[in-house]
Amino acid sequence: MDSHHPAGYTISTDPTRLQLDVIHGFLRTSYWAAGIAREMVERAIRHSLCFGLYHDPTGAQVGLARVVTDRATFGYLCDVFVLESHRRRGLARWLIQVILAHPELQGFRRWMLATRDAHPLDAGAGFTPLGRPDQLMELVLRRPTGPDAVR
Ligand SMILES: CC(C)(COP(=O)(O)OP(=O)(O)OC[C@H]1O[C@@H](n2cnc3c(N)ncnc32)[C@H](O)[C@@H]1OP(=O)(O)O)[C@@H](O)C(=O)NCCC(=O)NCCS
Image 1: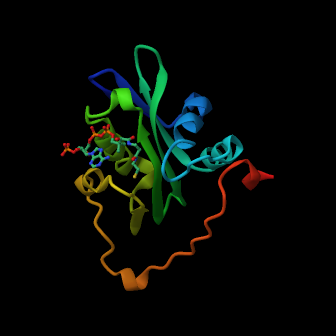
Image 2 (image 1 turned 120 degrees about the vertical axis):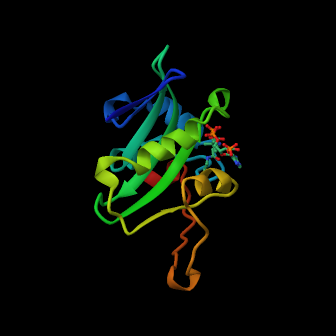
Image 3 (image 1 turned 135 degrees about the horizontal axis):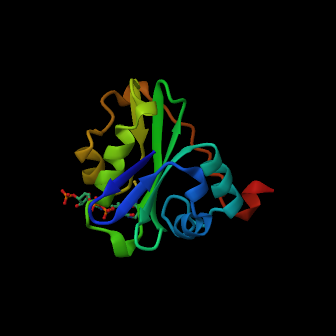
C-alpha cells in the first residue's frame, strides 16, 4: 500500500523498500532503543507491519513507524521517527493518520504506544493517557538491546 503527499513524500508498507541502514542508524541513537543491535532491528521489522516514509526525489527513507499487531484486535505503535531535516512539515501526523486508516488495521479493541514527549502528536490522532491504569500491567525486563542481546 502506498500513500502520496503533495510535498513529495510517499508512505509505503512494501518491506523490500525498507532501508535498514537508515532505520538502525536512527534507532541506535534514539532514547528508547539506544545502542540497539542491527540484527535485533532487522528481526523486529521483519515480524512487524512497517510503514516507511520516503522522500520522492531521491527515494531515500526519511522516517518509519512500526506496528506490532495481530491485524484483528490490537496494535502497538512504536519506533516512530522522522529524520531531523524533514521534521515540522506534518509528516509524522500524516504517517499516523495513514496507519490508523490502513485496511488491515481496522476493528481493533485498542491501540497502544509509549512516548516520552510526543504526546501532542499522538493526542492529535486520538490517543489518551490510560483511562483505567488499574487494569493494565507491564513486565519491564530492561534487557540490553546492544550486540550482546542477540547472541
Ligand atoms: C516526533 C517526530 C516523529 C515528529 O515528526 P514531525 O514530522 O516533525 O511531526 P509533525 O510535523 O507531523 O508534527 C505533528 C505535531 O506533533 C508535535 N510534535 C512533533 N514533535 C514533537 C515532540 N518531540 N514533542 C512534542 N510535540 C511534538 C508538533 O508540534 C505538531 O503539532 P501541531 O501540528 O499541533 O503543531 C519527530 O520529531 C521525531 O522523529 N523525533 C525523534 C523521535 C521521536 O521522539 N519519536 C517519537 C517517539 S514516541
